[in-house]
Image (cartoon, rainbow, N blue to C red):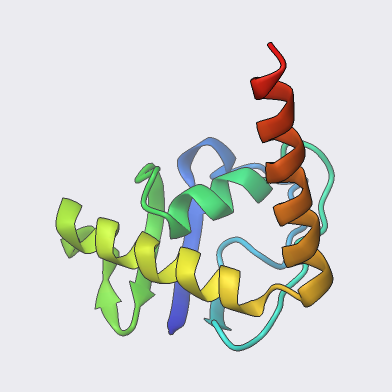
Length: 116
């Protein structure tokens, strides 16, 4: 899966002169086969970035393409299908240790519920 941000800036950050970011108002490409680290101080749009990719926000200027389709044209079914694919890809990329930790956490949570 490929994601392209074409000069995207969330409206709340539009015009912020001290933003100094490599994320907003640029042309960026992301591939699902790669990992990316988003590192920024509080209030610079890290959560907003994720919300835009998941279609939870649409208050931005610029264009977001997922698999060469403008997300402004996505309907609820398109977003639901995309989120399903994203979750499945995320689960398949986790390491064995992460999967074991999650399984142990679920078991622990289940035992706590059983003792209530």
